[in-house]
Length: 263
Image 1 (cartoon, one colour):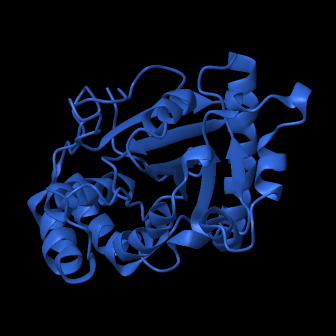
Image 2 (cartoon, rainbow, N blue to C red):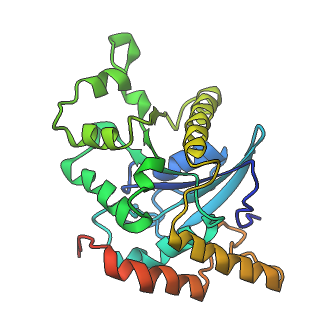
């Protein structure tokens, strides 16, 4: 059974973000080392609800939250508000350590650059400073032909939307083949944890904090004090607390998140 994040010193809390179909849930499974997240859980290939899972990895406890395409402009704002609140709820101790922006590099469109604006709207303007870009489908590049993710990125023009996002993330990125060997995946996770450790160090050893995360953390603490509190179901899905819904949905998202409506 997955429990609420504990806030322990060896815990690494990560929120997966990105468009539908880019390999977000698959990378979550890579991190967890098991098929905890199901890619394409609806006929439209959309992860419909937040779900979390955890794993012991060396001396770390990895706590991963998969999200329903928060940064996908095709998804209606009203359909994700409660799911955003759930992401806050399960990582508010007092906040996540890193946002992982999952991108398929060869299919990155100019409209995808709006993801950074959505990230700021949902989690605050400094969220980008705690973001690592994860490029999926690394197997699409053939090193024997001189084609790697590095050579691909070097060829981006200065006006490329992808280069713009890389610049905003200070070129913190990794490339992964979610279908690769376990040894390959392990190396990616090790590199990712090193990157996140650097982010944590810059944050004074703490997770990403905002007023909203602090308010949600207070609700979690109050509920824990009452007794056995675990809003996470055995399958990893999340039960949203009414007070947290009020903090995030009613007080924040309705005022700030201007998303494109697609019917």
